[in-house]
Length: 313
Image 1 (cartoon, one colour):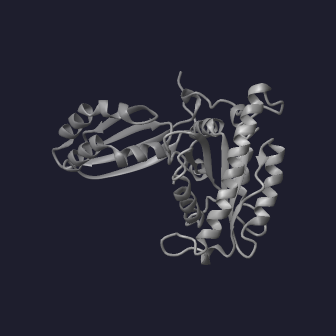
Image 2 (image 1 turned 90 degrees about the vertical axis):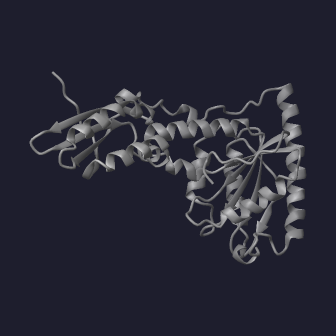
Image 3 (image 1 turned 90 degrees about the horizontal axis):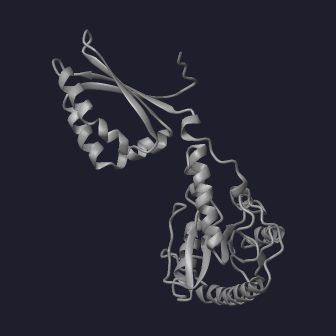
């Protein structure tokens, strides 16, 4: 799941479920799926699935800042957290530590529970280390936890634990403690604001440079229209100029033609090459335009360049 993927009940205590692994093919998905299936039955919980893997897909610095800000708002809205964490080499994943350290005030004065998995220890060594981290962040660690030792052997083909009753009892205890602490901490905060640090790294990050200050990526596409089709190709591109305004981060385009060779060059600049590629892959209007262009050309050679500088008189 991506960082914006959510599973939400109608209302109640807002609990953020956090993926502790960002590895491709992660076993974390199976454990998280089990946890989510158990929690959606709890009508007093409102769930938000938070996946740090989405931060790695942000692409540009501007996009990363936006993603961190949006994720920080979701964590700030949560009243409690449950982290699904694996144990790698007697510890927790580095990506999870980087994610946790990206925020501060969002964790403070809220309970944190753990569902862990791993080898013979069931991820408990990772949990004990994380407890120290969250203490420093002024969160409240729940004593109860759920753990799956030798996790790859603990789930059937449908993702159900072989010892589902034992796991269910452990989760019931964790949820009972979570509910108690949410109520106690909220009542305390209503009487007196929490006195801990309120700084947050994500909020303290310098604002990204305005789009005009960020060096764009430039797409240069050399078209070779079919014989006698250059004028028609140019007219088609001109008629579709308004389509470019739909492209995220589009800054401008310039179409050049060479009557001697019968070819044309389209030069466009964007804030983010990945955003442009995603738009091309999902835009129905672009797909229609592309089909019309292909009918008029023999070939095209698109290539992205990073702008080093731009000089004007």
